[in-house]
Image (tube, rainbow, N blue to C red; front, side, top):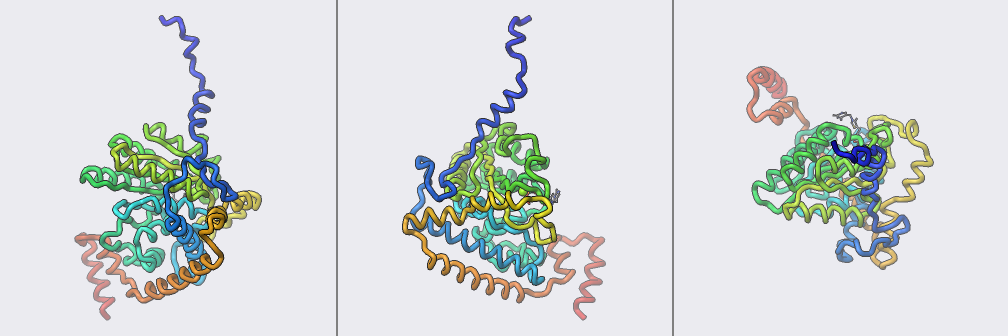
Length: 371
Ligand SMILES: Cc1ncc(C[n+]2csc(CCOP(=O)(O)OP(=O)(O)O)c2C)c(N)n1
Ligand SMILES: [Mg+2]
């Protein structure tokens, strides 16, 4: 018998604490827009910095317009994005066109900036089949509604890229709530085992509908869930576009160099309701908490940072706002002009070969629709 049995006694608390200690929040720009981590500054040109700001401002407007279009009954499903711009857009900004984006329902901005025409995003919101017909060469999937399922799909897409020898990655997004799903673990585990070039983003916006983050899991951070899959995890300030960009760039670099997947938790907040289907955030959040997060706003801090460098102005911002409004007006017009969806469209777009039991129904609808 070993004589040191007592010395190796399992120290449960210390073990849990030690894991969490390794996941300190990575930040480059603080709330005042000051660089607090010069060595981690990503290599971005002035034009690129301005473009990232332009996208965040544009997307904030897109969110506001989408909410009002939804209220007018001109959009269908919509999950607000304000607050999450740095997490969403700076992560997409670190990608190349050949990379694949597998979004959740709140991640419409990323796929629009990755090439999906805006009118198609509007059609997707309306449940119109043309919203799901992704143009050739645009490497995005339609937003996933089943929480976590996109993690498994991303692992598969990433493995496919690896097998084809392509220098590209599959990036996917879920929320804090999504990390409680089986698919989340299956996805990161599989990608880890096969060293698949995947980037798994967890946008921790503090709530899963009304369930607060503290009730979601006993884990101190969501990034540390990477440990069990044997892959690196990073906790990032999700209101800091530069930190998000730097983390995703590094993860992409690792992935295309054959070093496998990375899990990135972005700490963020959604200012609006969960979706436009009618939840009331005042029932599950305090205004103190809202205020605390609004102080961290990604647009405010990035604007301060750029203004100090002479790279941004009110005039520039207004130009972006006007452009966004104009584009949105055009896109909704184009969406309105799409042919009215028929029941037969729904069926023929669902199946490559119509199952025999649906053929009869298909013909009945076809006859009705041709009247
Ligand atoms: C498998 C599954 N279970 C439940 C739901 C219902 N549902 C829709 S959104 C949501 C909360 C998800 O929260 P989180 O992952 O934090 O993402 P967030 O909406 O905050 O971006 C739930 C439970 C679903 N869509 N899919
Ligand atoms: Mg959430």
